Image (cartoon, rainbow, N blue to C red; front, side, top):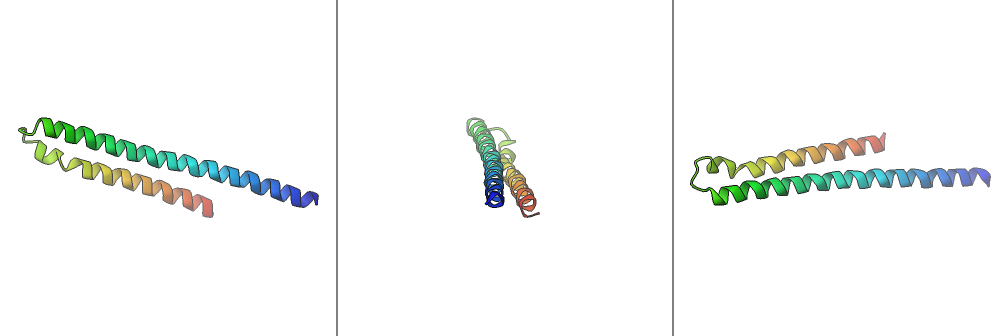
Amino acid sequence: MQGEDNITEFLMKEAEYIRKAYDERVSQTRAFERYALLSTGIIWSWCATNFEFPAVKILVRMPALITFLFGIRAWGMVRLWTDRLTS
């Protein structure tokens, strides 16, 4: 019975570790979402108040690029994390 208790304790600690790691990754991904939304809001707010500048035509497309780049980073983090979990 002692061996089974050790195995159960190990599995419980491993599950706790994996859960904490998962929660950390989720919070990092949510931070990327916040940064993307914040930067989009800042850029579009500036463009809405300064629409007479020629640079607005370029800047209005920047949020799509920023969101794409943050998405690639989040996807890479998820892949790295799942690779580490499966190895």
